[in-house]
Image 1 (cartoon, rainbow, N blue to C red):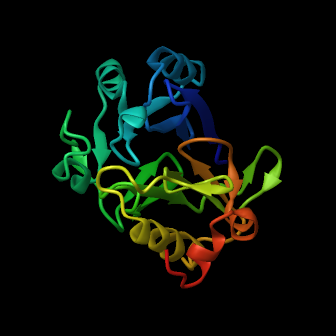
Image 2: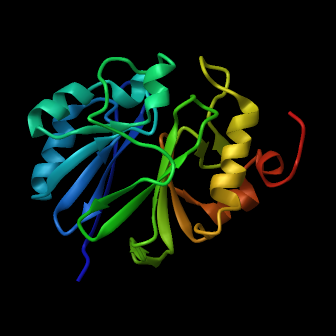
Image 3: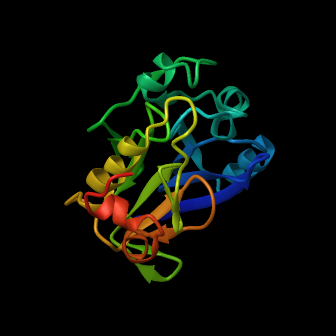
Length: 216
């Protein structure tokens, strides 16, 4: 029996979504953007064993309290080396660098790594096909997108290292036309509410830019 653990905590000064994800008491924590005591308390109430902190990207609102969480649980930090080399996040090197095609075993779940630049040079998304139900609804999986795509919107590309062409290409090739990912995947973004791939295909205000070949 697989027991899904999926908690979304809204933390920090910019309302960042920090996630606790896993199964069978093993979890990873994705994007520690603030309020570490709330994150720690939630993990302990779940009686879960954290195995790593994962970053989607290195902006401060997603990394603000990484150090405290790493020290408290004595676990490794994992993110993309391009984010470090570009200067976006240089506070700490990863204990394990992640790149396209890597996978992380979290209990009975398997998180696969996608390189999804555009918001920042080393931005990553993480997806899993193992979750089949969330809040009583049938799903085909989940994808954590950081600041790549939001509910009805997209991430900024005008910050250091951002690129609008790369951002739309990442959404298009890594999510919308990825044969591994269906419309019934939950999108778990870095800000705002949860959505699905199908919803964003139909309702996202920028959908023409990432579904077809449009000039920016």
